Length: 285
Ligand code: AMP
Image (cartoon, rainbow, N blue to C red; front, side, top):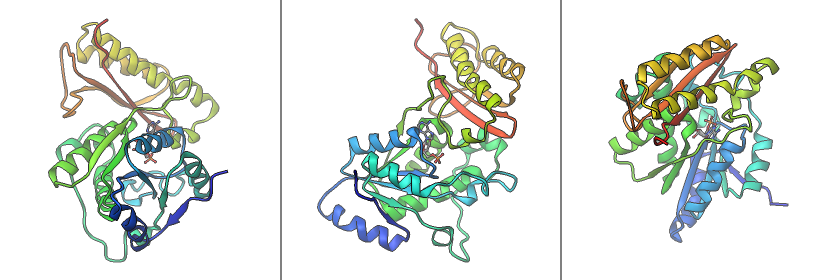
């Protein structure tokens, strides 16, 4: 039975724990999360352990990345369960600040990445990526890790953070981890818990459709026709589609016509639950 994992809640305690590790030359990885951990999060911990000597996991449901009508209040929280999972996964330290520690009275600074954040999820969720960029900047400064690991599940977020770190010359390496899925293809997400049994049955169609769009692109179909077909398929199954998009995998710029190197990204609602997923275009068979 692994021993209980150490949890710190203030920046002072975090730095006090990290100082001796840093002094002895250990490489530190940070895995930022909003908790209610599943196998997707834990895969990032495993990746972090393979690359670094010490793995810090932050758990913080970041209020400023939620819109006023979004699910901040109802977002699932299970710190006790998370600590057990992180102990078993071999993480070394948990940083779980409360909102007042992260955003003390009078907090007024905002980090805004621009460009990459303006469409796709950014179009539907104004201020979301500013909230993400602000909290990730704080976490990187608080922890000063050698590397930080993010999931490809939130592909736009991963690129936003890579841009942020590059633009601000932050001395940290950003690594992406592959998407972990249920057996039926649904990408693991804390928000899957919101799905009714009927919605849960329909949900894997999001991944299936993205894969079909990617396969059509690989066969030479144009980006517009392939993404339209994906949208229709999802709508016919009862999704309210936010976007099905074919983008440059590095810049997220829109692509049209036949494409080779591309990422297919989609966001769609089932009932009140917003699901996102994405995948690469495979090389032509
Ligand atoms: P969250 O707690 O939703 O903010 O996610 C924390 C980190 O876990 C982010 O970097 C996500 O991209 C990543 N993540 C979430 N779901 C998955 C998944 N199914 N597979 C891989 N990484 C994931």
